[in-house]
Image 1 (cartoon, rainbow, N blue to C red):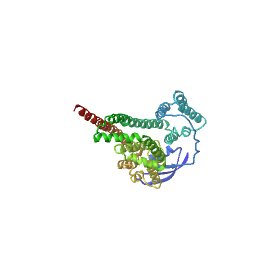
Image 2: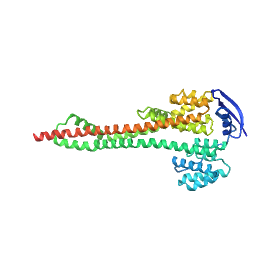
Image 3: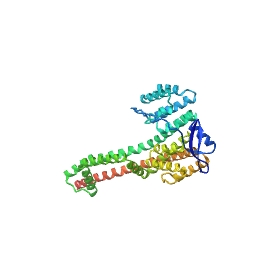
Image 4: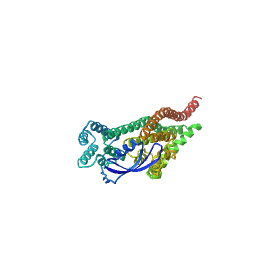
Length: 402
């Protein structure tokens, strides 16, 4: 048994601090949950920091999700963690992941816990996963936590695929649009200009405008390429700075048509991670340290840190969330209900499902809207160019007949 200093809140939001003995942090959370208290933070003696291991190679998220799904199935069937890891290491085709699993199994056999072993590979198993597994180990609910992790990863992959598949076709159309425009500007129009020069015919205004634009772009193509390269490079370097990340994230959320969808995807990740951590028995303070990073949004990450500071000072999560416009009022209201009923994890799960479904719906609607708009735009540009090029031909033909 270990002593834990805890900070919790009752259903009315009143702050409660105390010391309680428990065999694990998860047991502490369960005991206080039985008293209708929501644990905000819990601390005990410091633990040794694990040394990070450098590993080359690539492991995709679906492979990690498949690993945890298989591991959850085997552990829930009564197979020991070491035997499960041995079997999975032999089955997995990815050499990098297989090698990591073998190292993790070796560490466990030497006395390390599963969470401590995985923590040595933060590139593949972030703090979100290790925190959930640690909570499951302490509470004796490892198989349930592994099931939650696999479900969490599978839901995240499903949302990523939905967004990716919905944007592939518009990107293809945009690429084709740019290719067609470049072909017309740098190849087709110059050929017609040479032909019209030989005939020495007076050109219509529209034709002169189109040819002047083509000539200007063709003559300054090298400088445009250099300027574009420098602009992209400067934006890339700026996007890697602390301020640049926030500026680009703010611009991303303010983009017409797609900005709100991007924000909903980030909010979905935020709520999904919070729900998974809370349901695994991880204290609120530790959750707030993790969820902002997982959301993929620097703005949400900054807001999470400010919420964490406010909660540590005695405020509730919902009170702090209302101070940040990045979180919609609906989310704040649902968090209030979760705090009052002691079902914070369930409320965040519902928030996640709502914004996930909303993001998917908006993505599909956006795709169906952008496709005809881009095709019409392409048709308009090509139509203007064709008319501009053929007007002199019609004029020349008329003069020949006369």
